[in-house]
Length: 145
Image (cartoon, rainbow, N blue to C red; front, side, top):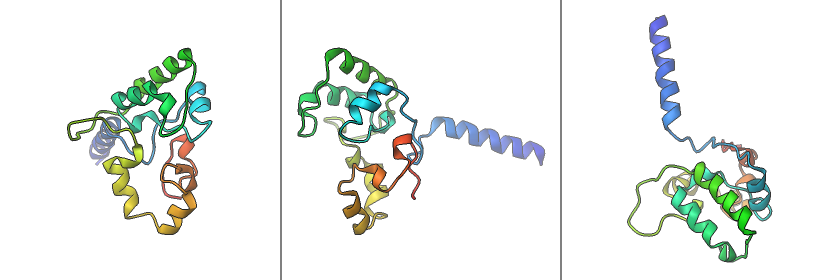
């Protein structure tokens, strides 16, 4: 019995190390990322997009989803390096441009389209306003509140 428990715990530990659970993402520890990205919106955890996506987003900050989010070159390099270093793994997708919007990713749509009420969507205002429903989102916790 003891051996079974140890084996089960080991399998659970190894499994946790190689899978990404969207309900708990790595907390952003970089102050520059938190302050610059968090100035206009919640700073999203880098693990939600692959490195290729973060590079594209950071290379076009003057046209950041309709806004000018430009930062000086030194900060842009530092932020890009952090996002790329902590980026998520590349997920299978159709050929073409990598995903640029977290809210358009298959897992995001699957989680939110069926579970989120119209009322909650109105309260959030936009699907990228994670903290409207997930109070701990800025700390990397996405469990339903």
